[in-house]
Image (tube, rainbow, N blue to C red; front, side):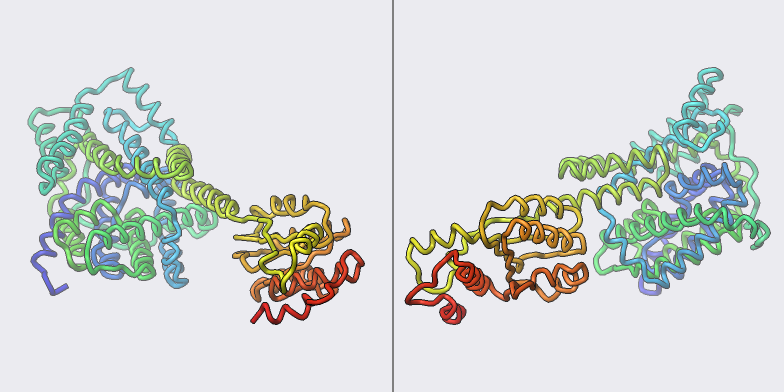
Length: 553
């Protein structure tokens, strides 16, 4: 923190200016009020900066968390949200102890892009009541609430609120393109507040009175009898906090050179931040991608910047609460609408949608589930669909190919002998994974083998074999045996033996010594079987059984 304090202090101040309207807006959107958003930004921001695993991460209230919190507020009230945040904090600490941070890398990019798009849509829709200047209708589904707000606006329009919200959003979006170094979020909010005060726009409802300071820490909100019913929402909040924080930390690493976060330590920092924030009336917090990006772009190099951001917001709480309380709610709605629009990167979405049909499907499903259900269910759906499609793609790699065994036939033989052997022996090579997804298709293919006397299965190229695959292989061998076809194998790997043995397939393959280490040995065994059965006569001059050693050499 002492390497370049001037740059870090300036970066922290800039982030605080950007974070102020966002903290106020997300606090209002969550249902606990602007003061809850400020308390979260100060307390959680400081704890995560000190104890987290990223030098550049900035934490606080976020739109994604607001999406999850709204239905919790509706169902359990403000005290329920504080209890959920506390439980989620302990769950995050447990995840850190279990070293679960490394599993973030397994979340597919289409899922991340999909829920980011869905979050942006939900954040924008959540601002419609304040942007239209109407009281927030009842309900926990954002589409229903938005529709009711529009209906109420049609009956009693409030064009003042609409003008303020649109003015703030347009100023932020256009200003960011023309002068990206200027924090137009705070500029537009100040302009909207001054306009509302000068022209006494009564229709522009302000935030309302804010406490001039943070409340004393307290556990008075905690209701132990309700902990059981709040456990499921707490798991959802903890999952989102972990996912968004680690994603934000990855973004910060990608924007810099030489910085790399510790995912498990980051989970610990977020856990401690979420334990502390509810004690001061704050909502659950996560790493904030937008604020973290601003922090990096303004030259931050250590935790001092994020800590400065929290300190500056604390000073605003203590020194400027009366001024902050006059900010119109419509102006904050405009800030969040602009933020939602800027979250959507059209180029990235188009690239992901054009990659493959599977990627496009995962992205659309995740986004739609985020809007219609909630973020946690959306991520679960996205991961489930992505996993199913990935398994389907892997299963398609499994092949059962009929191959020419003549090159592996020991000794020298005439064309007539080759033709005679080919009439009675057929060889198949198993390539790729043989597991539960595509195993049944393999069984059908192998069971349709033409009428021959011996089938040789070359198994050295099987990459994955699970219990289902082993059972299917056993069933196929039994079906062939019932048709009078002898099955011989070659190249069974040591790692496959345990799976085959567990379902009894290995004993079947070993029947009468029909398992061989190499394909030439299996061919010799097949020819010997045919000779013993009287199907073939032994070659008079050159014994194939004797020449297998020569071939192996």
